Image 1 (spheres, rainbow, N blue to C red):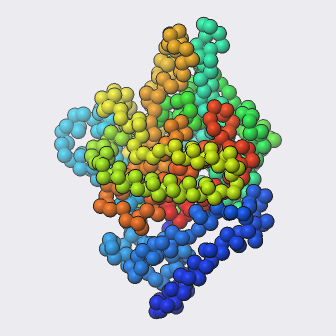
Image 2 (tube, rainbow, N blue to C red; image 1 turned 30 degrees about the vertical axis):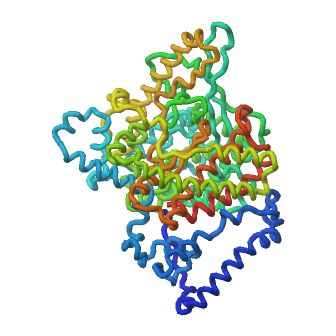
Image 3 (cartoon, one colour; image 1 turned 90 degrees about the vertical axis):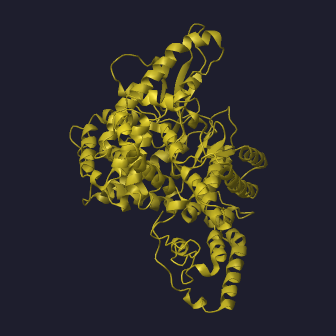
Length: 638
């Protein structure tokens, strides 16, 4: 959660008069009613995609949630604080009498993903002391490995400066020990090889989505092939042509500057940051310029042609691994890892200098590793790749995230032991209420969308209406025996060095995926003889799983389902009633998940097998999506 902003005291004059309060509320109401008119008057200054007619943006992009909380709590909150000027200071007021707790000291702990992190920590500690002998005798069991690591990892004694040393060794392994480079380094002609190492180790391809597709056999006796194909840009930042004209670039530039400052504070710090941001912008613009119905012809590779053998090949194998902890499926987005990574980046950006490319690569390494470093909280807030940092639980969060990277969906088995009421009917009933409100909100937003044509409007409404919301992934039903058999050879993690554990994990776990891939490819010819048009990629789903500890939503475009974070489930288990004032804080998870279903219609317009918007609608949507993600998330995210 972002830290509270400075309190504003100009509201103090309104405290003493009830009439003044009513007058102020009326004024606010008048301003809100005038917003569509004002939007029409100033629409010409926003950009070519903006239309003042039936402008939908005030519906989700406003501060009505602040006033809703102010009205609900009435006298329970600090009236010296304007809720819309200082939302966090208002909501976390010490005068929140209903719970008799100062939420500024434990911000949303029991009502956010932090509930599950802390609950898992408590359960791990209690389980370890329940039967010490049994735990020690069965240390090979994956559940015991998880619980022992978490219980010891969160202890103060586990924190070590070796983490920073480990990052230095990581950069050395990747031939980036001199990062950041202020000039073209001598002897750095092997940029592509450095990129291959980094991409293979960290799954870094930040700008594009890729899919794994099953191709029909090229001949009667040939097996089907799996093909990796680049898709459209992934990050919201890449959807905007007018980056310099929006707050998006200021926000992103600040993120890059904080990352680089972790390792470098020289005079040319600003020039390095500018080069990194500039490279991101060039890549975004280059990808946007490609015709909508044409695939990005940057990287294609047939997985069926990958040679098998005992020799470990990072480059070949990396194309068959998703995030190091889940196998591929036919529709899942994967990270392309290739030794040609920076060569093609340079080609896209018309030959970016070597120093710029290496600085960019070093920045991405630090971005990926930052949650595992014992740095101060101010740097972890914008750099956590797993979601927002949870105040007071940064160490627990880093420990659990590493466990998830290693054990993937196996962590859910442990979570069931820690939270036996996951499938309680009352929990499902409370969830249904949140989902119903979210569905009404997003449908109303879509119906008012002036940027949707009639055909695209009906398509979007049908797509969202057909979306379902769930707390648990369908892949969470794997048995404990199956999980233990798969993870029996995973080494114990080192709680004193999360980075070292991360890299040790990569080799051990990824070898298992290599075996799965080879087994699938070897069995494909025999299966193809009996089944016409077999989807080879579907056979890889035995190891697939949705991120369990993700602090945000997960949208699965294949099944059109939204999976909510476990923190929402922890909240639903914790509270007796979902009061009206609770809805805004958790509604955004569902709304953003359903909004992802809308976004999916834009992101997949290069796939003729799935419904998609027209190109014009997809471009106009960029402005609306940024308005939603920026303002609505700022007000409501936990």
